[in-house]
Image (cartoon, rainbow, N blue to C red; front, side):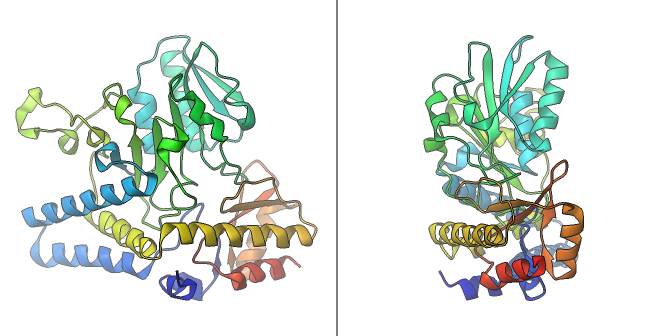
Length: 360
């Protein structure tokens, strides 16, 4: 890959050291051009049949791209609006009985915890929380689902590889918000039944995009709680209409042609440089930042070989504000003393130095 060529695709990097893809990735020029093209076409020619056909082709292309990214097949990918939507579809689509248990990990994101809390209230399901490193051994006869992050949002810790041992015992739902696009993802190796991911983070697409990979063995067992036009194999069948027999049954109920085009364009910008090279560069840069922070006496949270770096500050919000004033975009983590930087392959050593100098 050519780091300088990749970096040039993102105008924001001319202005600031953007280290916040864990919230929203930087938007490449190609994304805004693609979205503008869809808007212009609709403005000039109307949202006709051709408009919706074109959007359908774009969605099909996204489905193929996302499937390849995680080592799956297109028919096993649902197009969602966010990681959390994908997880909600799983939690609301499975069959539950009073006393069933979901096993989750400490420090999970509200995008998972909120739906889990709702599930507990609705179905009298027990939610049990354990340290991430103990989640596999904590599975017992009551456990009906394991739900945890691939990459923990608070520090970049990786889910244990032993999760794959559960594939024949209990389904695993993975929150892949900080995984897909940031690190290599192989759903077969993970052994998960469901992998939910975001389009606006490490895939640099617009807000309102994401996907959910569903193991074929679980598709028939996952109800589509509210299938509408796009989810039905024959919308003209009226009350006899049935959802698609694959992951399309769980697509978002509507789609924005502009967002779809922008998401596809962003993906292709990254894909052109090769995912293995992107992953390797981002992980190397993140480690450089972690080492630089430690050398300056900062306490860096334990982490895996990922793209998130979190460290402790006496006043995280004030630190984030001071860094913003110095042209460095990071974030604090509510309820903790940590500041988090998210390092992508589009960043460079100058971005890291800018952050470190601002902390001196």
